[in-house]
Length: 188
Ligand code: ITT
Image (cartoon, rainbow, N blue to C red; front, side, top):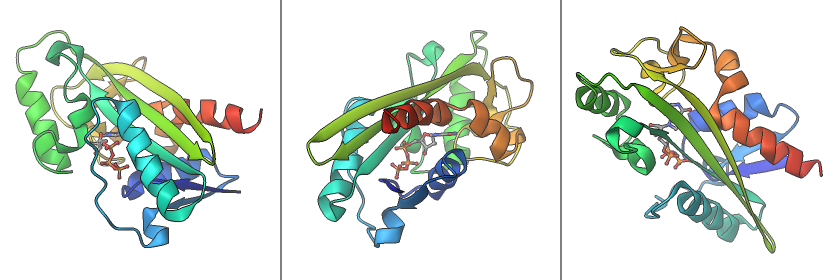
């Protein structure tokens, strides 16, 4: 069975494919859809829905939007829904530097990643949320993964997500936790 992910982010597509090996995971690129989707919602839910709706309207296929981000309570929840463009548009290094600068001298280093998935199909709109809690390292470490992975150490671990193999990250990540709920829904 195919699951169409409303994303331009190939890292996400690869992670989702690894987490759901029994499904054929496709993305916007596979449908030659290169428009920028304007994610101007004020929550992860709204943005996930915007992506899924765009995809469903264009293809008529059951579409899954993934809106994710890093939430830092000591920064009043930032970067949050602004994670992709916090300092520069998908400039992972600049975004990490901005978070580290804002966290200078801050002792409370708890943070979490969140993924909200929105499934849109004929007459259907469903949401699935996953989180992973952890702490922020003081300098980046590792070169696996993407985004803020080099500064995020999941609870109970010593390595950052970027120090881990994709397989290890995918066992415990926010995205994996949301996809588990999605799978349970599919199997209902
Ligand atoms: P699409 O909208 O096309 O799916 P995107 O990268 O813009 O791709 P988001 O709007 O969900 O996706 O933005 C998420 C940003 O949050 C992303 O660019 C990363 O900086 C960060 N992020 C999301 N998931 C992450 C993960 O698993 N590890 C590290 N950073 C992540």
